[in-house]
Amino acid sequence: MPWFQQTITLAARCRGFHLITREVVSAMPAIADVTVGQLQVFIQHTSASLTINENADPDVRLDLESAINAIAPENFPYIHTLEGPDDMPAHVKSSLLGASVLVPVTKGRLNLGTWQGIYLAEHRDDATPRRLVLTLQGE
Image (cartoon, rainbow, N blue to C red):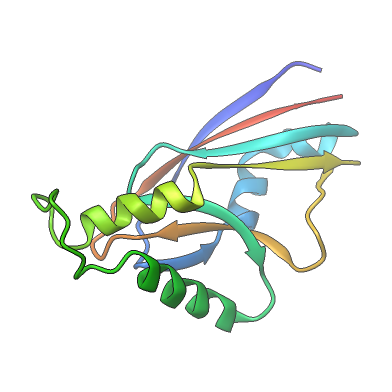
């Protein structure tokens, strides 16, 4: 099977953790034709990130946001401050969580665990639309 690649743009979202699994799957219909493979989701930004975590209880999203803010607070004495007080903490958070996730594809579906979903972690207060590159390979 050939490789498939699609770039999508997600609408701007408020700061926090946002489930994007459905948007990703909708943007890559070729997943349905893959028996075994993998999908990489890569974000082309340095102030937002991607992660996989529980998708059932919305409190998880709030707790993730609270925890990541405690790890990289805005009141830390950052040197890079030209783009506002949330910019450098956003870069730290993005580096901690990462710019991509790799998900196995099995029998035409993402092979996530029962309670797992793909999250966009938006780290800026005034976010812009976010570009994702989806790369699918499989048989």
